[in-house]
Length: 77
Image (tube, rainbow, N blue to C red; front, side, top):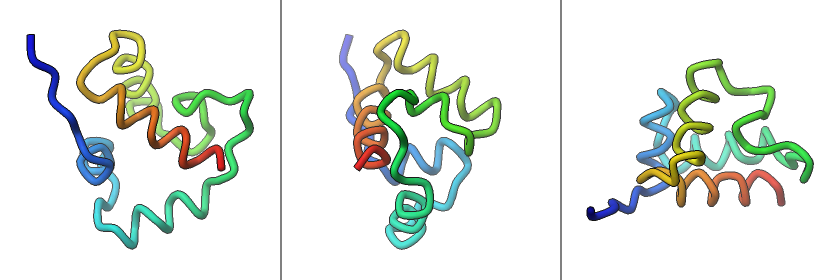
């Protein structure tokens, strides 16, 4: 099975968020720093469906897992 690599802008689109560079940068600046004890999918700012998608992709190590980890890293800085 071949895994796809998704970009951060594609993840934002998948989550129903604006996916242009300026909007992504604004989102990250607005929501960081995410405390190290908070998993990215458990952050307060996600809707229940967004959080569920993030949790499922991480749990199954799905196609989106790598970019979800990248987002978590960007939010933790």
